[in-house]
Amino acid sequence: MQRCLTLTFARRSRLFLRNKFVTVHCQQTAAMSSLLINQPKYSWLKELGLSEDNPGVYNGSWGGSGEVITSYCPANNEPIARVTQATLGEYEETVQKAKEAWKVWADIPAPKRGEIVRQIGDALRKKIKVLGSLVSLEMGKIYVEGVGEVQEYVDVCDYAVGLSRMIGGPILPSERPGHALLEQWNPVGLVGIITAFNFPVAVYGWNNALALTCGNVCLWKGAPTTPLTSVAVTKIVAEVLEQNNLPGAICSMTCGGADIGSAMAKDERVDLVSFTGSTHVGKMVAMTVQERFGRNLLELGGNNAIIVFEDADLNLVVPSAVFASVGTAGQRCTTTRRLILHESVHDAVVERVTKAYKQVRIGDPWDPNTLYGPLHTKQAVDQYLAAIEQAKQQGGTVVCGGKVMDRPGNYVEPTIITGLAHDAPIVQTETFVPILYVLKFKTEEEAFAWNNEVKQGLSSSIFTKDMGRVFRWLGPKGSDCGIVNVNIPTSGAEIGGAFGGEKHTGGGRESGSDSWKQYMRRSTCTINYSKDLPLAQGIKFE
Image (cartoon, rainbow, N blue to C red; front, side, top):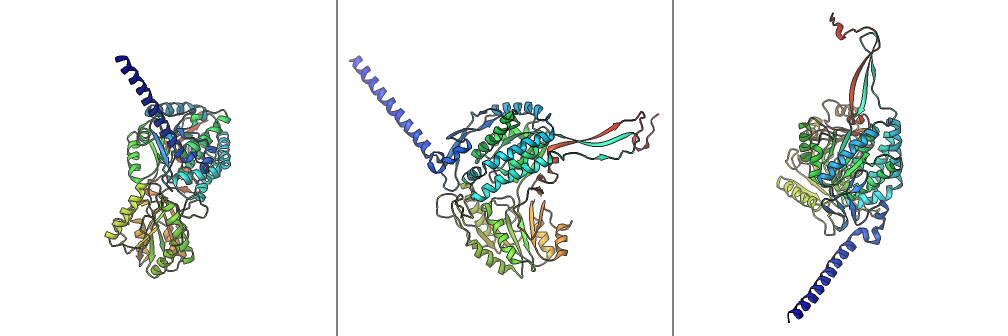
């Protein structure tokens, strides 16, 4: 009897285990098949070396044993693929390998480093459409903006190639006979790059191309919600390094969350921390880095304004205001959030901009006809609704938009709100969503003051034909922003100029002009080639 019971139990156990295995296997198969990467429509993702499960650590070899995260498409909230993030132990290993790689990279002459950066730019060119498609799919911006973002990385590579033959300091006149006085610029070492979701390729490119040319190695932590883009870009860069027999850890990557970012900020081996993100987090990064007397480069928020004077060309104003406020669904740091209109043109501009808003083509971001896609996350949708409610409570009137759209994904209507005071709390707050606050002013002094009264100081623009006003705007009593425009929008900066802002925007500068200096340390060198020892300032010590 006992034997019969035992056999019966054994058979039932085997049946249970077999059914359980079938159930789990079916669940795993269903989960894999539900990933967008496994659907024929998105098979192009595999051209970037992506698969269902992707390693989120690169330091010359690929790995990752931390938390597994799923990347979702903002246009439909469907899962794309998975990435395994770095553990703190893997971060430690990656830093060590990056520091070792620097010993090789720093010895390579700058023009030779520029040649590697040129090859990175060419590799990106070959993948520009498919990588731009990934940016569109994972971040949510429209396809042409996704491709344009990769183009920015390419353009900065081109710029950095030229820079590789121009970096240098001046030879200065010495007051002492037989002495040479000069500046020597050297790389800082390891540059930690923390980027945001809204420009998951370009911001890394701005930092990476210049940092490499200057003789640094890089450690990248991209946004946790765009990990596939980080992996795809790193694969492209890693292949170039491998082809040149260089250590892959020159361009390392550790996908992760706040734990990895905090480790980078605290780590004295990270010689420069370049952080792009919110002012709130940026302040914490800056304080942590400053505690160890490290260097930081901050690109934070922007509560940007367009000021329209009575003599403005409204045929320029309207498309500028629409592009700058609606582009990337209001998720650029340079997005126009305040439209400050002279009282004589206020009603006409509001009418024309509202009409243009209603003609904006909303749809899937990878549809070439779409001009406006989804917000990046569901949390952003909640912030959008909360901001509109606060604006209403503070006296604002919604003249266009104001609702969540009834369709899959994180879509909201681009919104215009009038009637608020210039110093209303919601107007003074940067909300990273497509809401445009329209204000009415009377005098130039009033308009300039309103532009400058917010805590951030990133981008600003006026529309006028008055040349005197233009130079007052550019002068010491004009805009206090890092980007000061005339008759163009607040967004769409070129790579040739230094990009960044003042006050709570952080003060950092990236991309063009002399931004390369942020990635180097300067030494003042005096060389005595005489047989005498004269002292400076005519001091005698005999």
